[in-house]
Length: 177
Image 1 (tube, rainbow, N blue to C red):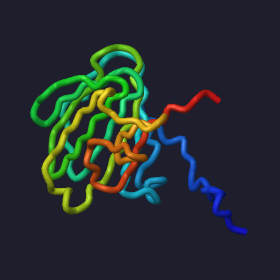
Image 2 (cartoon, rainbow, N blue to C red):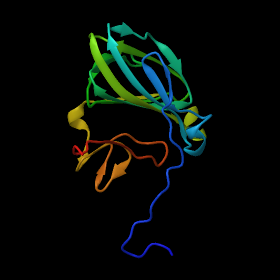
Image 3 (cartoon, one colour):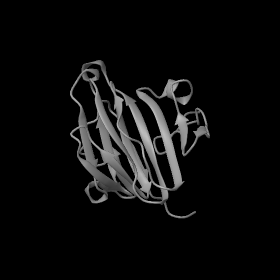
Image 4 (cartoon, one colour):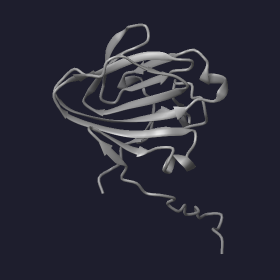
């Protein structure tokens, strides 16, 4: 017997993962596991670092986009135009590498820093497109109830980031219990 008009169908959990941890990062999803059924996502990483500051230095990317969301602490960045800054907790970095770019960053302060980084495969028409960097402080991120819209939309609220695919990435703050 199917759900009635007033019932919401129950979705089954497809897979569960605790990910694979390497240093301060846990790869929750990659193309060889859950990512196989969640394309265009490439990786979903959770980072949790407590300790001394560090600098990741400049490194290249191409053909992908990343969205970094800082839950606690702050991360520093160097964008392709050599602009340096700090992204505090609640902030978002959008990096769309297109045909290629260099960027860098790290942690300027000792203490705990936690967050998520979503890696997205760009569609063919954007793989060789221009590089895009967008840094949003927490106060610029729109909310709909307990949902902060990091990418995509919910209700009447949309992210200012132009997503390469129809993706919703939300940060939810739920009540205790």
